[in-house]
Length: 451
Image (cartoon, rainbow, N blue to C red; front, side):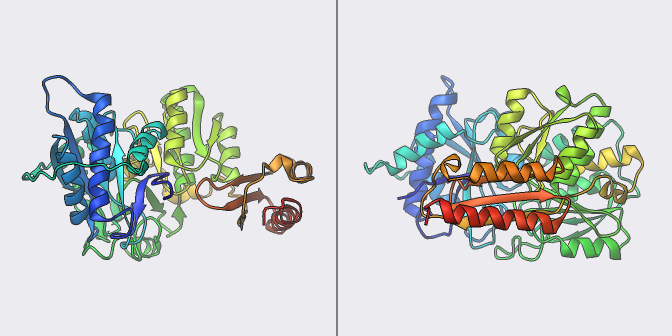
């Protein structure tokens, strides 16, 4: 049996392992055994908050999961269909022992997933995940009695809406502003339109008719074409696309051009620095963020800390340095002064507030920095020898880095979850970086012995 937890919880295809009903119940039970030790308060029955996106498999997964949670005498509050970041916010605010989101985020509808949040609203660290995983994969029977209760439903929609609106400057309004909002037929299909309407915006909503089988299909943050076209057609100020669980977002400018997570950080970080909200004049990005963004931020007096891909890595670096913004090019942005994890709706309103305050159209920010051409490649490998042990490989990398003369970069790593070597090369000339990537790939194949 392989590792259960990936970079963002446990994911799979129901009803194949590990997403069989019986094993899902064991996941819930194992989580209570581990997490009860971190937050239990004497004289108080432990509480778990559970939310889900609209996938067809969600209700059955929730039923199986809750059976395992009940077995350890935890009280369960069912939040219904809510964004992932709403669960993160409410777990901390309600002082629950932990939270669960049933969602596969941006993945197609045939997938589903289980994400856990600790009592402080953060995704579980690797040490805690490993403890839960060890219980599940130990080979010893994880026996418990199936106890049936009525699941108590609790609607916290207004609380989450008030939280989002409360992060905005006093008196902020979108009255008279026309927006296009794509909800990905996902978790925010009700709550996101309500937030923007309460802020006064005139909105055209797409991707807000979930049927259990259409989440992320031709819509959402991974498929923004419909949103971009509608933004131009309706002459909107901008367009916004959330993903299936609404923890990330993408924008379109008024001309229909896409603004990804790198573009959003390029707007937010300098604005926050001007407002004296950017601790230590630093921002966190992953190694996949464009080199042009790094240069742009450096030119603005903002130092960039780069970490491996994954929002938990971004969060950890922000916590360590007490930093206020970090993000991924995928649109997963963390405004840590307001929330400990990425939130697509929060990101959307914060970007709108910044752009409105600066009095510029979104197209102005699309042309502020030069996006470097990027070649991303991968190579399947049988094993993973240390890169410094591959004959001549480091010397070749140093040679090419010298040729780029500080106007590009080379990033090479092994995948943490797949048998792959990943190569990223950026520079001013696409032809040059293509040759570099091909040469490095060929050299590795010849000298690594990894095939």
